[in-house]
Length: 119
Length: 114
Image 1 (cartoon, helix red, strand yellow):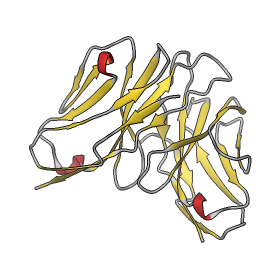
Image 2: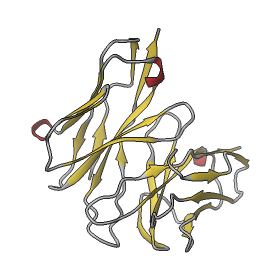
Image 3: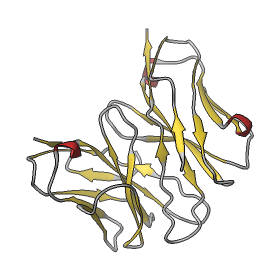
Image 4: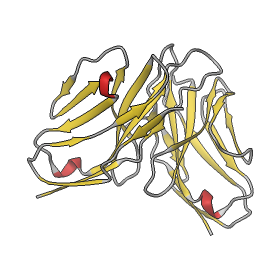
């Protein structure tokens, strides 16, 4: 069974601080995909990034960066110079490879980390 | 903007009633998934439809059912509502092209069961 753990329930930072959101996952699959989504107060889940299990290259996109380490089953997310608009709940999710019709590419989500950025 | 829309935004029902939630997928997407998100929790997978057929189901009872239409819009139906069905219901559309698809979510329907 797949499982995603986000141990940090809530994080509060002051604007311009860097913050790292932790994600640890469990899966028996050798090929899988990891995602981060952002959920602002409006409720809509906003897709941020997708990584493949066979690609451990870390990625930077603007103020966002992701650190994928297969050896520790972690996929951490860092926001540099946080802003008030970054305040939201962030979800890490896991999906097995979709092998054809009849195999749902369902997302298994963690419980989320609420990030509060204040002035 | 993901191009995925849901209606209604909010809904209040009483226990035992039936409800239908609607989702309009992003253009060109052939797959729709439905998730239930209880307060303070992560979304839980209900089921997925691919080309109008159910393509997988999570741990939800049969009173949760769905439909996907040729234009890729879809419905989630819940019969015999229970208090625990109160949640945010999210639909996500995607295009399965082999390997993996990225799911794009709508704004959700918040269902309250009294």
